[in-house]
Image 1: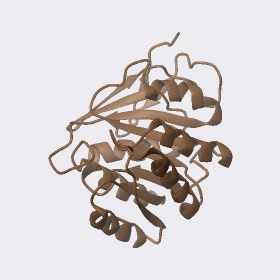
Image 2: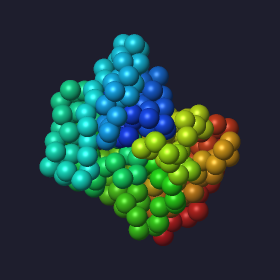
Image 3: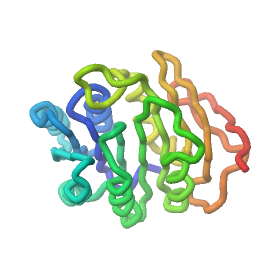
Image 4: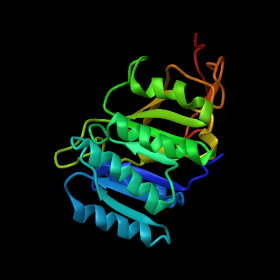
Length: 228
């Protein structure tokens, strides 16, 4: 199933991969909250493109170093967009406190949610992605990572404007990925590698066993290793 709240917040969405993800989610019929750090003009241009699709768009500056204001920005997005169903984080552009504030809206909606962390290295088994995946599975909130190349000069979000990376994010926020959580999708050019770690069964308090995952492009089932 989809998150019941058709609103997505994307950080570092004023350029590069963050911008491409925001536009992809708009194509998927999400209202989009565009969080930027420096380039408001670019973020506003992206918002204008979202609005041409007859969707809502909100633009806010989010400075993770200014914690009270950063958390307040999440509240503003939720108020303007009617909640938050999806959160896409670029490295260094979001704090744990902001993530947990967004999670509160997902839980309150009763319809689940999706969190996608964009990273430049694989998350460890004890990292935030795995911890949140286990903690939030009972609320039908999935948490996954997309691993991409490091940021190019002038781009706040790592990874190029890469159709492979944006398609993975689109997949992870789709009904087909409703049970996919705690995994990392490594995007290296045209190659996408699925690395399960700390998987939890969505909607359950127990870890998943012998579960399968679907590749976003081929549709092939990829069995994961047994978790303990």
